[in-house]
Length: 318
Image (cartoon, rainbow, N blue to C red; front, top):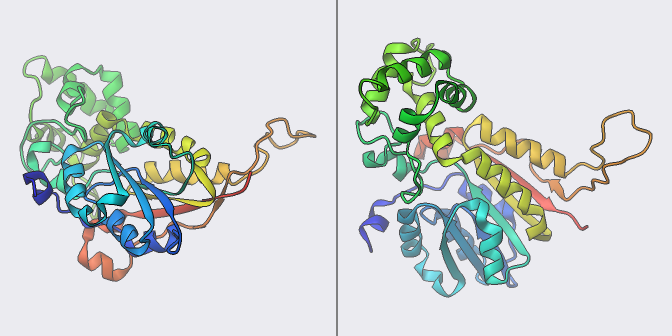
């Protein structure tokens, strides 16, 4: 076991629900793409349930891939792991010759090991370098965005991705202070958030939390990744195949919900047109009318499951 695989401990959320709702065959050969394989928790359960399942696991984080390789070694002959963004899954599948698959899984957001390792710079609770990259090989860090982004760009990031009250005020202060001393650590940014922004109402997250969330989303282009990846899903699923998406905040869930709604609808023309001009036909059938959330037992074991929402859709015949 490498150091990375030994340190990458992550509890998969909604594990039973994912396995049941993906409904992969247990008596015949089938294929699944786990676009965010992480530590391999969901993939392990799916490989164990379906002994003829072939699995492609993708992740941006080399540490996650090392952990997945160790965790899934029992199914090595049925496993392919690749480093990449999850929006790249069509290209990676093409390289394997996987024209159609029986299931696609997305477990969005940041993982527990990424948050808990201070040197990754995702958390404001321990001062470390302002990094926040899911793939350490990418050029854009949180520090670079803070120190080079315009006031307008930073305001939009905080407002749109973190729904930060006082986004303009925070952006203005960052631009003013970085002229004297560039931001380099999570502690510096967290202290500025506490100084500049209003105290949260009772029960709300601490002041720095939405700011750090917004920066992380921007650094990793998380919402753009989701949109690009979802657009490719229907063409890759075989009829009856299912896609499952676990999201952890409202911005992610809204994208997934709207995509499933659109792709399960017929005509998308504006109301009132005498005939359909768009030619749109349903490609998916929504399986979960409402998002599936964690039960009391799971919440006792893993408090981070409290924000998780699972939505599932099924490919319909053309």
